[in-house]
Length: 252
Image (cartoon, rainbow, N blue to C red; front, side, top):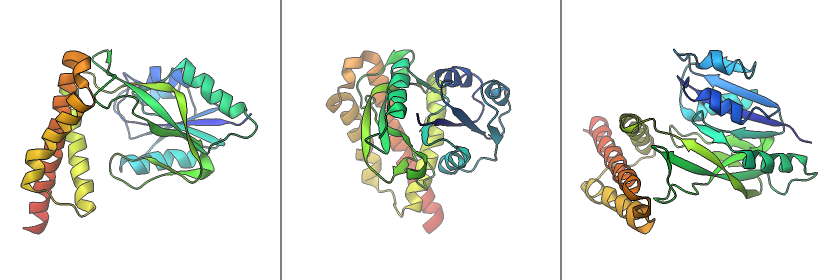
């Protein structure tokens, strides 16, 4: 049987980390990289694993790369502190680890994104496949400020089971994250050489709303789908507005 390392990055995740770690305590190894939390995150994490390290925050990609460097098993599963591995996912992963020659070097896993206690099945929020399970020697995190992902040198497949994702505590938390992640996204776009136009501010948020609410049938999720679609549109507006602001500061 091949071994499995789970890697997680944290900062002030006292409310989430226990449930997260309990959902993966069947792994051979858990590696936590904490950015000097001021709550009980580290204390709780050390109840589950001795491999808890603290490192000054840089960005998502570098923090996860640091966790990956400390992993020692043949296979790696990366999850966030607000995610939970389901029993079905556990069984599917263990079957892969038990197989003599796994067919793939990396696997995409779907996420059930929950919003105010409701699983959002539409809006493009499900199945929300992300490459999360991979051979340690075949995978690496790309160098992005935000929305980082794993690059796997080899064949990739899909698992049937899902992660549960509980990303927002409340409406205020959602707005805070929009503010934070739109800033990071704008910074990444500027780094990529992009600039915001008036048409981006006018039409891209509208296109995002139409895609989420109508094309991806967010209306089937009722008021939750409407809220998710509106805030998705607002995120796009904030991202391009901040890109416009950064462009002025750089080029004016």
